[in-house]
Length: 214
Length: 92
Image 1 (cartoon, rainbow over the protein chains, first blue to last red):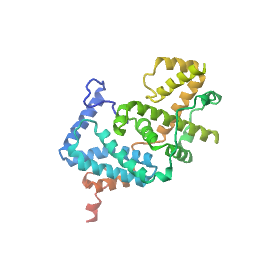
Image 2 (cartoon, rainbow over the protein chains, first blue to last red):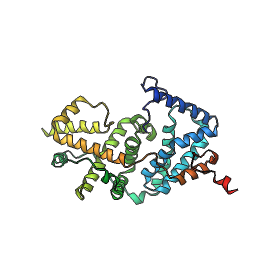
Image 3 (tube, one colour):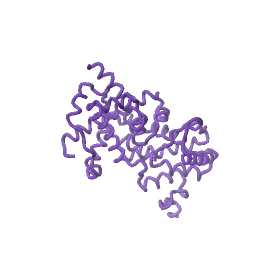
Image 4 (spheres, chains in turn purple, yellow):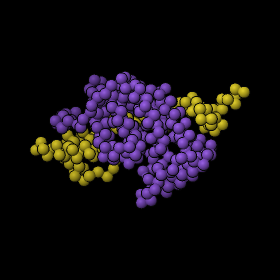
């Protein structure tokens, strides 16, 4: 599912009728939840629990932490929903809460992951790109548990500030505008971080593939 | 020549921080068609993103995790259909 890339207060952005209906329906549900309707709040939980859990899992790489982040996020949302001003989409608000809890978790575990600096792609290295292209990954490869673990390990090697942008933009398909709002950074910073994250993971994948058969 | 390549590469990198399927800059597209290095570079980035997307299900959540969440929120009675979250009710 991808979210309609629309600001609730920006009527100039064109969205399809289906997306518009979805948005209107969600606005009604959120209004009810803000007024204290339990069933409406439960609807919001049902809709976004998977995404918040996945965000926590990808941020921390740990199922227990992901569950903690999920519970803390919705408990905080429940306690503060009456103050939600509806100036942004509900998922932007939920993601912001979840990211903050995720960052707290990571701060506690900083020693485990350490820190590495990643830079812009090396232009001299680019001249070697043509030496070997990649074939499309076959289904067997994609479903290989060991390969998936390696992919997750590579993602966990990304410094948190790049990883979070990659998770939001590429895995959860959140727009650049909303990602910037959630992380409280500029849009251009979001793009730079995303580019670096993508390039880092490409290099990691390159290393992985050089050691095994496709 | 190297300077030109670096300028173009910077533009390719900016392109790579955008939506990969967004309306790309014409100059970059034209360049990618004639520059094998950049074309392969961009293709690898796209395949990397696609691979991560394919192996990540954003909506997946263990049933037990949902049960606990609805219980913690005191929403047991509103747990999704089939999740049988109303543990407290069953216990009594």
